[in-house]
Length: 357
Image (cartoon, rainbow, N blue to C red):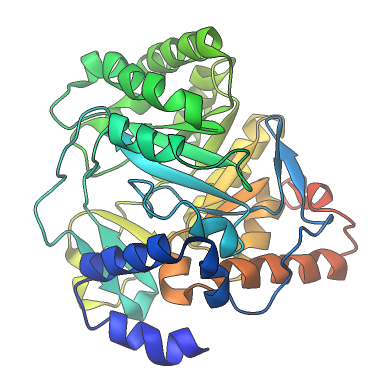
């Protein structure tokens, strides 16, 4: 309440990217003391919300989405705020500034954001050093999302991804190959079946050589069912799970003045589209491949809808921007109530419940 009534109006007076950087500075400085900002809610794991995915134990299914803490600047804040895991990145092999500013836009009338950041990253070596400094074991699983540098063509992408993979693999609990951002030229071309197969096979081989860790692929929401089926085939035997979805390039029904800005759209307008992709993926995989659901989650109800569609875990980005530091605990607490309401004793029992119909 304090955030929405007092803090958010102040932050929203500033450029969105400047506000974002300020928030990361504060959370990075506070570290574990960020729990003071998290509001009421359980401080200990709730057995009903605990879940094992790809061999990792998650204290709750509410994660921080890739793209928020791109450079691992606030690693110790995320468990303090009640997140059950955090996905860092996207991290590129070599440092790059990303696209020219301004490149982040708020759409308050739509509870949405548009960004065209373009993988601004300090590079894999810098992020690896920050992760290495984090005490182990991590209180929550830490995933690292990797993508290719903008100057690297798709036919040379594998080597670029492998550079990041080798630097970050020792320090990540799981890794995510981002092949779906709309803000790096031609990156979504990596989702073509033959190209995706080759890229993910190369990563899978190196993953096994380094000591296998869970590997996910992050995909776009703007794919047909046939394209999703091709991607599932490309991922089979190569990845352990799917992150669904990235931002969308669609713009239907938006009210805000910034609706025509180029970039990826996130927030409420993405909610139903990403949920439908999750439901389709769950059916295509027979519910055997873990899905991390992301896109338009602002409330516990939004998260629950994705879980019932087939997501074992969910992630917040835009919902965290609009909801503030209490959001993760509120969503987790709300999920517990919804599970009880529907007679589910554990989160696992709810995964895919609506997709089975």
